[in-house]
Image 1 (cartoon, rainbow, N blue to C red):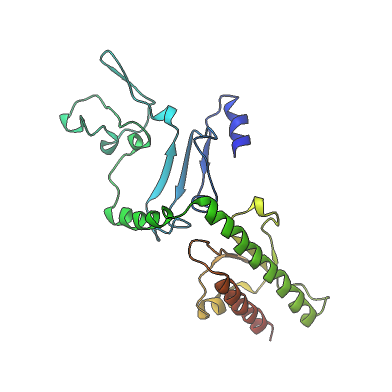
Image 2 (cartoon, rainbow, N blue to C red; image 1 turned 45 degrees about the vertical axis):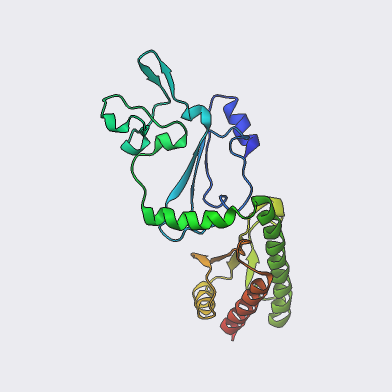
Amino acid sequence: MPKITTYARSRGITVGWDLAHAAGNVPLALHDWDVDFAVWCNYKYLNAGPGAIAGAFVHERHGQVLFEDDNVLYRKRLEGWYGGDKKVRFEMKKQFIPTPGAQGYQVSNPSAVDLASLSASLEVFGMTTMEKLREKSLLLTAYAEWLLHDMLVELQDEAGVEKQPPFRIITPSNPLERGAQLSLLLRPGLLEKVSEALKEGGVVCDQRKPDVVRIAPVPMYSTFTEVWQFMEIFRSALKGDSK
C-alpha cells in the first residue's frame, strides 16, 4: 500500500483504498502512508454486525478548513447538514462551513443503534493493539493452514492419488500476503453439501459459488481449540460427502 500510494501520488493521482478486508484485520498506517482517503465496512473484522455503519478516512490535507477574509477555503465535496461545523450550523447561512477533518464529509446522521454496536466493539479493540492482534492472527492462521495440509494428506491417502483432492488452499502461502482468512477451493460439486454439513456442525463461514469456502480465525475472539474443532467438522463434512 505505501509503495503504490507513493508511486501514484508522485504522478498527481489521488489515491483511495477499499479496506473492507483490512480494517480490524491487519495493522494500517493510512496517514503515514500518505493515503488520500479510504473506506471500509465495520461489520466484518470490526464486529459491528450485519448492516453496520461503514467507516472512512480522509487525510488531514483534504479536511482543512481555512478562512481568508469572508471566504471559507476547503476541498469541495458533497455537502450535507451533518458535515457542517456545529458552531455555525444553526445560523442557517447560505455558505457551507464544513467541520474540519473527515467529519466534514458527512452528509446525513448515522443510525444510533449502528453506532452503539460499533462503539461496543471498538471499546474492546481499545484494550489491546492491532500489533498484538496481528501476532495472534498469524499464529492462528498458520495453525489452520498446517491442519488443512495434514488433512489433505490423510484424505488423499484414503481416496488414492489418482483422485482429485477434495480442496486446495488458494490464499497466498506467504503470511505477509494475507490476513486472517484462508480461501479453500473445493472439488466441483462439493460446495452445497459441505456448507450444509458445516452449518449443522455449528460452523459459521462464508461460501463463494461455485466452489469456494472462506474460513477466518479472528484473533479477537477465536481460539486455537476452535480452529481444531472446525477442522474436525470440516473433515467429517468432506468424508460424509465421499461415502
